[in-house]
Image (tube, rainbow over all chains, first blue to last red):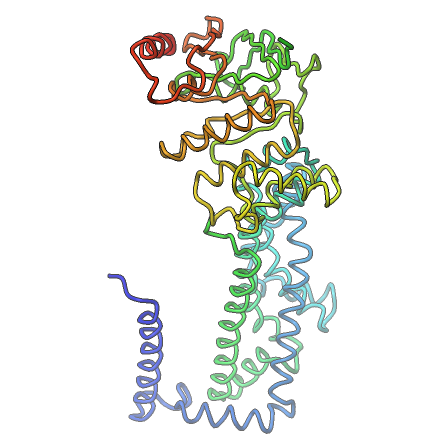
Length: 258
Length: 246
């Protein structure tokens, strides 16, 4: 069954309205205790209160800003380092042989497993948090770059060589733009991976950040504060993904059209 | 006639293959002619082009351009691919000027050559369009213009019109023949379509499935034939070629 785009949007909106109504009804009829599931009104009033008074003496916007700085600086670092390394690994077998097994080894390990080691190695401050998020974001971009390079249409390369391009020109003018759609997919996955790691990064030795706020609130069973934190992270995650999709559509405008 | 390309005892065996794909092939291409190569799928036509264009080093033998051995891809050897291999992130004008830009021509020279070629392939009004906005025939015209921009000594076509419908293919044939006449170019055209080979080739090289047999090159009395002139003699000539390739 095919619907018009507007109708799909309507289904999404209706789904969220239904979820809100169910949430409201469950809390109104006290099906679950409020400590486990606070009502929507309670979450909204907590959000307003946190916006006015902050949490633990620190403004809510500051918690949010710190989390975003940690997240975005880690993703930016991953972009700067994983793209060149991934592109070179996809093109040069020796480089691939050196780095790929190391990255494949680190990739499946849960970040919390090595977080304590990171703290011991790089200190308890901001660096360990950013490095943890960086490690989570690195592999998806690196792997996407390799995949992008390996998928480059061989006729694109042959054609460039026959037109007089040097190996360096082929790399920058053909391979890099060809791999861009995959690179963007990798960046979007990396933001998601770093995002899911942000609470873990703020679990240890932090005194601010949305992740820290959720962890701290959980210790005192402040489920309304936890809900505010989770909703902020959820909405921001969706917003960041949409923003990346928008940038992707502008930069990789040919993707899916050729 | 001045020899432009000489294929001498060319043999190519792919790694791991028990039989050579090309065995002791010899072929001379004269400057200013169109030579078409016809053969069944899998007989080694594209392998021959890939070796002549410098993409694959031969196992034995050599290919000479103006008496010099071809050791790799070179701007003097233009190639038009079956799937056109145009860059979707560049517009039509930038695709055509790509080779000149890589070779560090100045902007004014690039623009001048691109504008001339756009006019010759009748795509001046599409210069700012992206290739994904063009029809299949237009894309092939851009690919031809791109190969010509470098002013190569020969342009090789690797079954470049196979994916086009008949009407579009006829248009492209006209473009090719017009360019050949006006620019005195040398074309090497691989095709699996006998009518196309006869229409476009001054001479026709026939690749047989039997690797032991030498490649036969025949003169073509029906070069640039129009559909109205097709008669029984043409059909006999075509059938003769067909018998040799199957």
